[in-house]
Image (cartoon, rainbow, N blue to C red; front, side):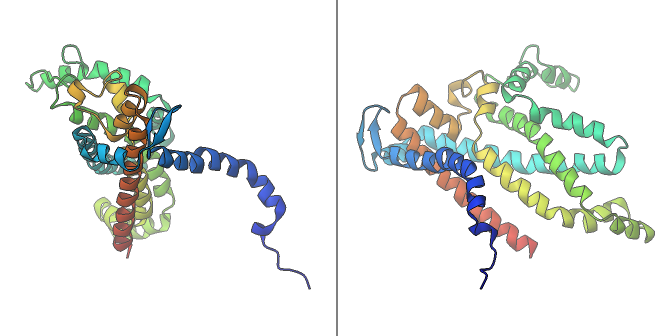
Length: 292
């Protein structure tokens, strides 16, 4: 009797997968395990001892962490929907109205392959109160110069604008791929019956884009909760005036590298991991209901 062939049971398959599995284990699973264990330790990385839940208590009672979570939530729940709506509109215009699509795809994709730090430096000049191009254009409409970067009230709005701009490139490319996967026969039949562009989008395009949109919401939401580089780049290594733009990951960086409290940093990491897991779970459940 010959045993039924199963690819997953072949020794060669596991040998080929071994390098990838080793990298995943070392840099993902082992890192998560060490972070979790370190969250129960006090002291520095070389000399630490067991502290129980003390680090978690300090993080939960820290008003700076509360502020970081609040800023992160405002950023995530502002950037994700606004960037997604703008991306759908731009991608649809490129797909339907523009002839040289590849040229525009390249233009819109360039920010995605550009360093966030480099773009942040450019945006610092754009947002400068005295000579920034944003205030220059707003001046045409009678708007007085806005202190985008050195005002506690404008730190998060400035970060949100930067985040929206940074999210467009990836979203547009993925949405254009989604547009191309829609059967053109649907459009031909709709146009034969005299459907308008809005009716075609609402009844054909958008429903078939829902899986793509669901993917983008998940990826963007997780990315927004981990926002750090944008803060660092936009505010020149700081978290805005008086830490007004501090985020959860910036708080972790500050506790780990600046303050030298790895236990507290890892406790905050575990809490943030739990929040992202919970938000993603709720979001997936909501999307499942929408798809039904």
